Image (cartoon, rainbow, N blue to C red):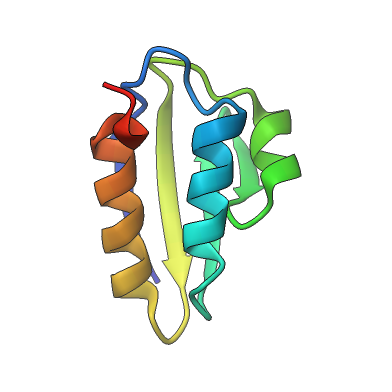
Length: 88
């Protein structure tokens, strides 16, 4: 398992558009992903779970990936999150 901490920097947080882009990208990997936020584990491959988590601007999250392609998955997730999902 690999993990990394992030701060959500895009002003609207993980609203529908970035959440959909994120989930689509993560579902191409065989590994599992959990997002730790506010003491809960959120399935990072589920648009419904991400939307229900209400991850806003400035939120602190931890992304955990586990599986055969976990490093590649975490690297792509990091690039998306750190770039503000292209909204900045």
